[in-house]
Image (spheres, rainbow, N blue to C red):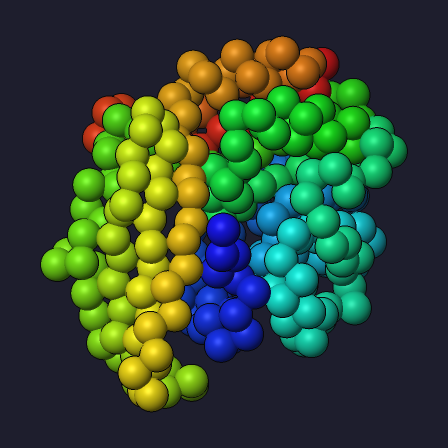
Length: 243
C-alpha cells in the first residue's frame, strides 16, 4: 500500500494544511500541567508539535515511521532540541522514565487492531509509574468518512509546488476500517493517488485496550477544552494514567 507521506512535495504542504491549533495548544498545556520533563511524541510527523514542546530543561523524543517526514522535521528551525527516531512504536525504548506520551494528529487511527496492543504496551514501557498517555481519534459515531466524497472534498489551490486539484474518495468501509484515496493532480496532469487506512474505535474499545496493558483513570472528552463527549462530537480526546 502506498504511504502518502513518502512524497516530498506533499510533505512540504503538510504543515500548511495542518497548522498548530487547539490540538497543539491542548498538548502543550497538558505537558505544563503534569510538569513533564520527558515526552514521547509517537507519530511526530514533520515535528511541528514536537519542536514547540521542547522547552528548556525538557527532553522530547519524536518517533515517526515516515523517513520523508522525519527528514523534513530534522531540517526545520529548532530541530536540534528534539531527539528524532525513525520507526513505529516498536522503536520506543522501554526506559520507564517519560512523564508524558502523546499520539497527535490522529496517529493512533493508523495503528491496526493487531498492532494496537503492542503499540500501547510500548508506550506504557516508556512511561514512569503514574505517567500520562494522551491522544485523539475521530469519533466513529460521527461517521465523518461519509463526508469524504469527491463532490464534498474537491478543491483547487496554488501551492509552493504548483496549482493543485485535490479530492478524497472512500473505497472501502468494513466495520471500523475505512480505506480512502487522496487524489493530488499536479500542474503536469499527473494524479498522485495515495491510499490511507484509518481504524475508527469507540471510547469503550479504547478503554478496554488501555486497561489491558496497565493504564487506569481513563477519561475522554468531546473537544479540546474538556467538553463532554457526545454522538455528535467529531473528536474524542483521551487521557490515561499508567498504574
